[in-house]
Image (tube, rainbow, N blue to C red):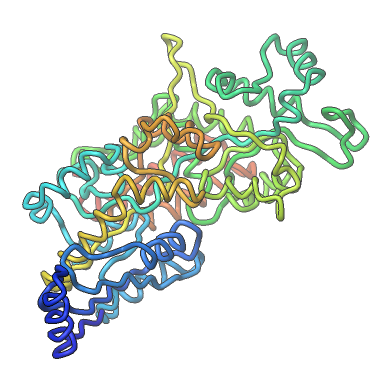
Length: 476
């Protein structure tokens, strides 16, 4: 971060401005706010739009300077910077799961006193969807302690081949075989549960030469795909939806130290959810059984025209509409992901939220904190959020923007994004996150590749988590 006093030049500028009757601060500074962020569309847009439009209300010359870091090395680079004591960044984009690590490490700033003193910031936060504030800002999770703000809200969406799902022949054949409607419209997808999703996966399995829509398949073709990757959090992000929708749970950090892992993580309901997830995988491409079906592999398979429908984050699913890289750009539509019907027939849609907050670091001067919070208010202003959505880079975080009549028409996934936000939960925010996740991913991979059963995987996960969290003092 650099602050440069501009001395006499500014004083002269202020004199000229006053002489000409133009309002201008008598003294201003150049302030550079350095932000660490992953290198992708949502943060590239933020930089470009800030360069074009951001003007600090203070009159200071404030520049947002984003250090773009490739996703594969993003956490390691940020963690190294935090540990080094170099105090390079004033703002950091952080996966929500990381915030506990850096809060307890003393690097991320608690913001309640600034929010309490700023009615404009309070108004902004009142407009942010509560699911986003809860997941992106609170530590401990679901507490009243606020540490961040939404930078890129992300949720899952279904992308599907409308040329196949809306084909009259395919619709008639599906109706004949399953006595169900093959979903073609958004309204149709609202009625799709996981059993129907499984039927779709089975139905669209075709071999070379088989009829497919108005033509024939030229290669092995598969019905459905969702995350089943061993790396990072890929399988966990999809499996959690099945566990929650079936009435199961994960270790609940908001109820520590009373919350237990054993008996919860491996409950009968959680086992049922994981079994359903594993059963549906049989309709996916063979890569699903290798531990490599992450969000990027799913995306590539869909864009190559090898699967009929996928569930993926809308932040990456949008690439399917890029005619330069996608063979199905003109054939793709979007719907809400499937859910699970509960005992009363209501659809449960609990899912794991994606996306990232951005946070302030603790070593900033009061002046830089103030200027950084002004950047936050600019980013979360209705005007900026609407432009963010229009450019196709991201999703609005504000309820007022999502309620605009034109919002759903801006991007084909916007309607689904707004609809699923109330159903979002998150994984743990504690510093033990990576140990919990790494072991869980290993056990899920064993289940996905057929080495252990769903119950065996969850028993191993529950035992590990109980021991780790007890040792850490988070379980009594």
